[in-house]
Length: 67
Image (cartoon, rainbow, N blue to C red):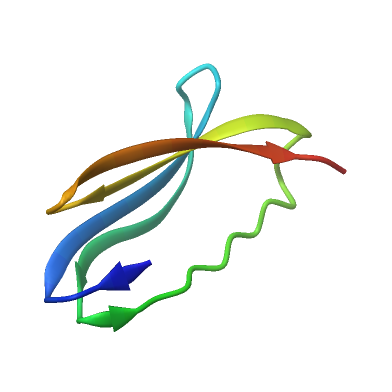
């Protein structure tokens, strides 16, 4: 993700049943490019949603975890 100014950002992973499975970022970040690692070793194969909330808006995308 690219941040152009100091901002509060939240990045959360949800199951398709709307259960929060991981909160990867929830706080203020500095300007610049950021990468987030996600250890999904405790999750089953399937479809998950990730929710990215920034001052510019909220975005929801799907991801497929295959083992």
